[in-house]
Picture 1: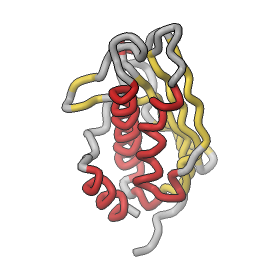
Picture 2: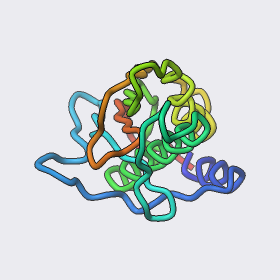
Picture 3: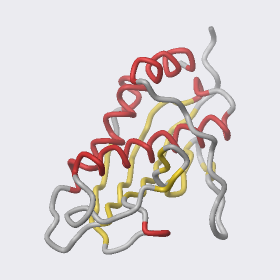
Picture 4: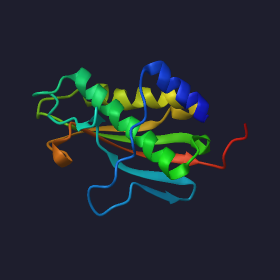
Length: 158
């Protein structure tokens, strides 16, 4: 699966960032009962945090790109924790939080940036349940934050 993901990233013109260190008193990943619970990941593009509010100063397209960047950080955290992405069996759920103006209602469209990335990288195993929630503010002024639940198993052979 790791080769499939590397190939998909290359086809999309994307690369995994360095897994971000926590910015407060938490850990990036907790393993329990065959599931990984990943803390919310923020959107970094070209080394800079994507900030702003959807419906005010961030377009839906830029929000989708920010959600995709969060998804890339999730995969980077998975790779750092697991060492081998072939242990991923299923992206179970994504929680997408969108820094939104009061009248903004396109959170699901923004969340598609992360959702579509998971399917592009993991195929059927990337199809997941999801929440897409508008919030008035996110840590550090981020435009989007995404957390995840991922089912894992033993590494796949060959």
